[in-house]
Image (cartoon, rainbow, N blue to C red; front, side, top):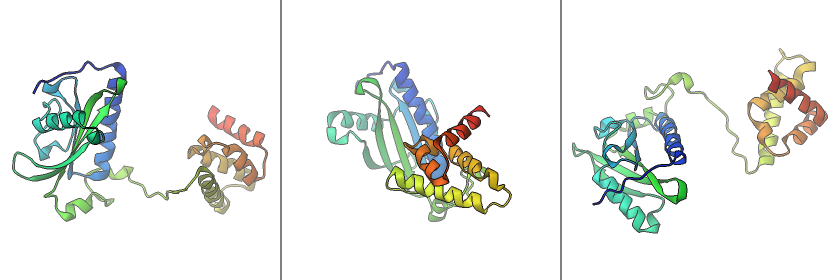
Length: 226
């Protein structure tokens, strides 16, 4: 099979580099049962630019693209139905079963510039698999794990209501915050949560706190100065 190495643009490289950070986040969430390899099609002989949990197949960064990945790439290019990627079963060099997926990464001009290959090691024990979802798992930095309450709102208005009401309740229950500083603290917490990125957030919060929009903007300007 002919190997058509690509010349990547600066934007192509930025796209591929963003996937490197994505893989770090995914492995922290999924654990050691998953191997993930990011291939750049700029150099087929050294295509693996990021390898996570490579002990499953023995691969390291700088490894060449595999024959299966090349075949998957050709199938993706030939058939539009495979444009989102291909899922299949395979084996590593030790004959151990893997459930695999090859997902194309597109860059400028809608060209395929890389491949994200994910292999799940199917001999992973049930206990090891579920350990990755426990806070005491050794697969990630425990100090970074925190327990959060997430609002799965249906629209931005619901998100605003829920977040503002929850924040207001917590602040008003906190006796260490003086009455004069309650609204300022609420606005500060909402600012730190990124709520002011939502459309009409200032108007909504001003109404809920029974203050003017100018007062909200004043608090925001002071926080942005700090």
